[in-house]
Image 1 (tube, rainbow, N blue to C red):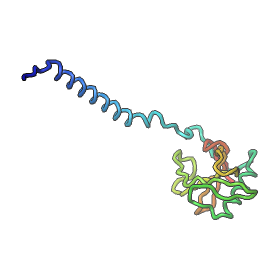
Image 2 (cartoon, rainbow, N blue to C red; image 1 turned 90 degrees about the vertical axis):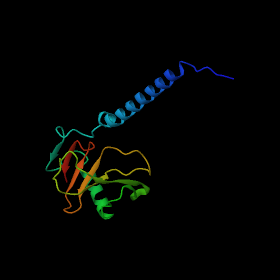
Image 3 (cartoon, helix red, strand yellow; image 1 turned 180 degrees about the vertical axis):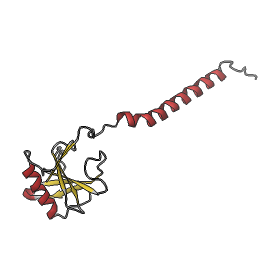
Image 4 (cartoon, one colour; image 1 turned 45 degrees about the vertical axis):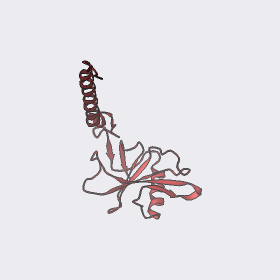
Length: 149
């Protein structure tokens, strides 16, 4: 028994191969370009401001939070910590000062100001601490502005 070769078969293979290669190229291009296009910046350094003192609303709350975190030794591990009143507060771990708004050549850590129920959503209020010097900044708007405490 003899079978006749299908003359369209090689064309189908070449078409599938070309489609597969085009899909792979598109996926690689999306992986290389996508993150730079889709990743938002937390704040634009041209818009961020650093103030030498804190006189705005909630500075007292930030100072109270600093005292609470100080009593816990300013933990460097990211996570939830037991707080007074049966609540919890979140330490965010290392703050990298990507925008360069705070003094450079220092290691900073971030802490939430307001305690809440364990696992609840975080708000925008943070204190940033240089553990070496004890210098502390309050950011009421998630790193757009910094007020020295």
